[in-house]
Image 1: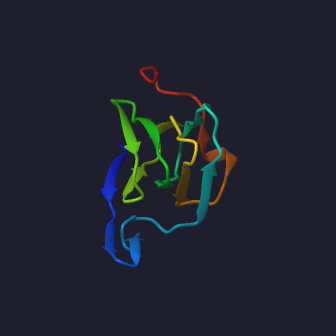
Image 2: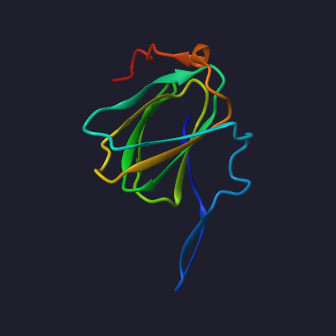
Amino acid sequence: MGHIINLTTYKDSRGILTVLDRVVDFEIKRLFYIYAVDDSDRGGHRHHNTYQAAICIKGACKITNNDGQKTEIFNLDTPEKCLILEPNDWHVMHSFTEDAILLVLASTAFDPKDYIYEPYENTL
């Protein structure tokens, strides 16, 4: 099941530095970001093998996650929160603020065969 990791953050008069160091348990092989989203949902799939780490580096969004047993909604409203998604976690990204930028780190390069587009029965 997906879970939040609070990232180490340093704040002083010069600004804010948030660190993603030894936080994810996978080698990062792909990075992408989603922005300029209207009121549409993004995602709507799960993976056979891919782990992901999602950070809303600007603005806010929500990610609904279902692991086949339970559904949970994660509110990514600060760049200090990192949502870890495991393979087979059905996820839908939604409720993007106008200025939202969602950064996603993935454990695999893009492979269309890794995607599963059928939700679990109890996923809404």
